[in-house]
Image (cartoon, rainbow, N blue to C red; front, side):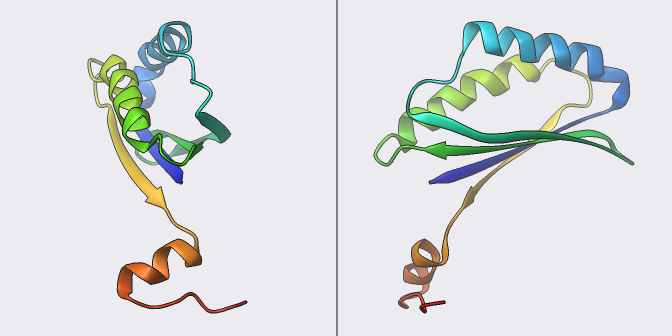
Length: 105
């Protein structure tokens, strides 16, 4: 499974986010069942957005969500912080959700 986390904060909170990020790296390093695909940053009209694409080992999804809850908790005190968590599915994973088999492409 691929998870995408989108974090957003105002530029005025960037120092606090940096400190929280360092704290997360030190206190909650990624376990072996979570493989970062990429972490990206964008400056936008709302401030700063961070996109984290992460591959989760099959069967470890519940553990992964518990792990990310701990990481997100470190960001909650940052003024203006918000986040979104999305599960990204391949066609092979998504089509069965609507009772269909994925087409061959």
